[in-house]
Length: 369
Ligand code: NAD
Ligand code: GLY
Image 1 (cartoon, rainbow, N blue to C red):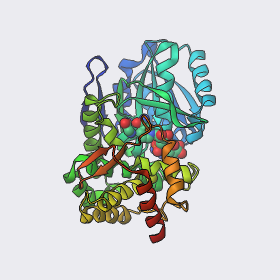
Image 2: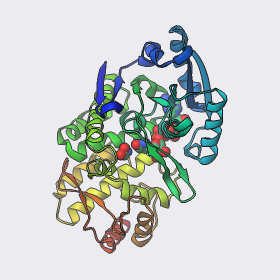
Image 3: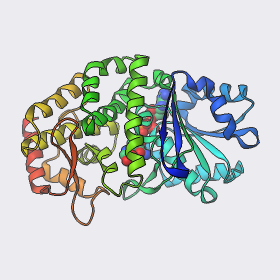
């Protein structure tokens, strides 16, 4: 078992990572069950695959379970399902001192976190992430959100959970494509500031994706330790350090937008192609050695993640993709901060990027695709 602490004064919390911990969740969660009861919010897929394990463990610890089961998919991060969830929690008489458990991927985690942040002006919540993306990224750090007509994640809050309980064995039932997409976020930590971890990914990424328990646990622990340190330093993304976690996301967002935020390109797949583009663009600007950009592309290719526009199913030209970027919420005062790299593990935030040049680069990428 590994425990990583997110140090945020009175909002500090532990991330517990342990193979099989879902079957022992009762002992971790019972202290948070006021009146011997916990509401567990999940989606239909996770309810079928993992909820029985959590329920059995909670019941074994003398905790009654009230499940709230929502539809799976990104569309659940919506006003409609937020309202449905809040109404369900109010009907279950959740009080400010209560904890609500989010069992699922980033969709359930983001929605439940947001609901918890506004229910009766704030109740507590616990993350039990069941996708690799949620285990290494979204369950940690307190970003919560729903989508609106104007775009993804535009309505939300910073609201930290009380505990994150990660059981890598829940990935046994996750579709392989989802695990691979989540793996892009693992690679991201190496590329940001940890070249040794990127080298570990090159050596062991295949093992992790094949279900090797040790590789999974190691990658999750190292990823959340990196994220916990960044969040403790820059919880609300004000100093620029937390923004590094968006490596690959500006390009990736444009690719996701062009493919209609559909199953054609999962979020992690967009991030993978986006990271490859960010490294190749950095190399084109003479900032990053071409060999480093090549290493990134080679690794993503080796594990079956998209690394170019064709692999991302994107046919749009550079100008259209840049137009998508301009709709991204990260645009500050008319400029588009861009994450570029001076090499593997040397990502930095640039405010000098010329968008016409990005469009020309993407046209070259499209021509080469
Ligand atoms: P998801 O929650 O939609 O889960 C993917 C699919 O896998 C769903 O169909 C789900 O039902 C299913 N599933 C989940 N766990 C399973 C399991 N163990 N077994 C079988 N099926 C399982 O997607 P995701 O990739 O986890 O999350 C994507 C969301 O995360 C996006 O909305 C994104 O905006 C958000 N996100 C948030 C942050 C943050 O910091 N808050 C960071 C990154 C991404
Ligand atoms: N996933 C980006 C962040 O948490 O800031």
